[in-house]
Structures are given as structure tokens and as C-alpha cells.
Image 1 (cartoon, helix red, strand yellow):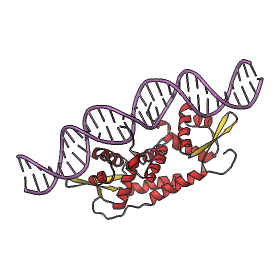
Image 2 (cartoon, rainbow over the protein chains, first blue to last red):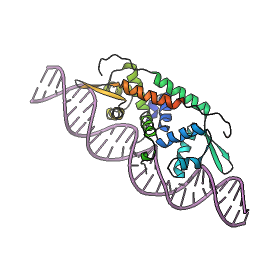
Image 3 (cartoon, rainbow over the protein chains, first blue to last red):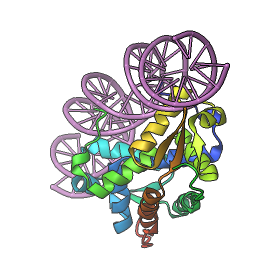
Image 4 (cartoon, each protein chain N blue to C red):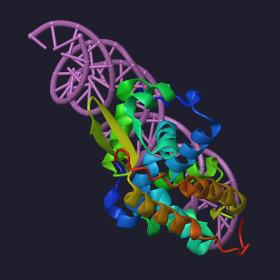
Length: 110
Length: 110
DNA sequence: TTGCTTAATCGTAATATTGCAATGAACAAA
DNA sequence: TTTGTTCATTGCAATATTACGATTAAGCAA
């Protein structure tokens, strides 16, 4: 039914999935990479950098903002976006922990 | 229009997004965690472990298999799934590189 | 063979996502 | 005030995702 059954999973699993989903679009990856390079970026720059229309970029920025991955600051008529450093560390930690898991080699099937 | 414009992004950005999207559902996170714990797992185990119907689990497994994150091995009537170790290292490396990027602190806006 | 078990596939319904034109809101400059 | 700039929001169309009942296919056991 297009509706994820979040209630049957742990908070950690749901949170991991939510953040991963935010990374699950090339435009949002591109936005984050751009913010990393500059650590200060207005929406208009992203529109010209990435080849998507302004409302589309704005929508992707909103998603990243909702998840607290980035934060925006109004500067006159333009808005400056940055990585939320504190939250980024949390997310980084969560993913590092996930990738720390190494598959046990037991060779009994694959 | 519900269709991602992959052609305007780099291969790296598209690949990163594709893998992240696979991690973007709690059921697939749960499946991977289970496979890490056991490194050998039949579909039926996952169906009882996670509270989703058999066709749904099968569908999630298919997605993970399409991306080469896991691989399956037929064992009589059941199918054994495992993490694809080689591919997992590639993915891990890709994410570690992504998270290595630290935002430059310049404090000029946020 | 028949019956049972296991998992993939098909078909379908409900919901989510992506993208953008049009519009609106807020501010700065003239 | 008017005009232009910048970004958010609205509304909509096209496509994707999630979930599952029903069915199918393939192996095993009697």
C-alpha cells in the first residue's frame, strides 16, 4: 500500500532508514557535496550548479532541513544553507557503526 | 514527474544515491542486520523475524540482490542469503569516503 | 504419482516521490 | 511606491514504492 510499516521496527532501524532515504537521491548527494566544499551556499547557486528547477532544489533542501542535516540562515533576500555540524557527527557515527559490522565468514552457504 | 533525472549527475552521485536508497527502508536495514548476525539465513526465517508477509520480504531481498549487496544460494527448497563480502567492502569504502568530508568551519553564515 | 514446503512472481491497491509552472512573500533598490 | 531579486509554497502530472493475496514453480517425502 505504499505505506512503510514503521511500527514493527526499532527506533534505530527507522532512523537509519530515514537518513539513508535522504541520501537516496543524487540531487541531495550533490547538494551535500556542494555544501561541504563551500560550507556556505545560497539556493540560487545550487540551482545553477545542479541542473534542476528552483522549486525542485527548494524541495530537496526542505527535506534535508526537516531531517536537521542542514540548516538555513536568511541573508537579506537570499538564504544561506550549511551542514548542521552537530547532527552530521551523529549521523556519521550511526553509519560508521553500521559499517563496522563485518560479516562472519562461515562459508556454510554462499 | 516521479522520475529522477540521473543523467545530470555523476556516476558516483548516482551510485551513492542508489545504494543509500536501498538502505532507505527499515525492513532492508533489519534484513542486513540479521544477515550480519548469522551470515546465513533463509527467507522464511526473515519472514518470522520481521513482521512482514513473505512476498514483501521476497521483494526486499530482490532489491538487495539486484544491487549485489546480498547474494542467494538455493539449498533444496529453501534459499540461503548472505552479504556479498566483496561488494560490501566497496560500499563501505564509498560511505566512509563520503563521511570523511568534514564541513569547513568558517562561520560566515550559519 | 500425490501432497507438502519454500520462495518467487503476478496483479493490484494505497501511498510516496520527483519535477516543474505558476504564484506568493519578503526584502532591497530605484 | 514600483520594480526586481530570491526563495518558499501550491497544485498537479507522471512515476516509484510498499504491501499483500493469489498463484506458480521447484524440490522433497511418502
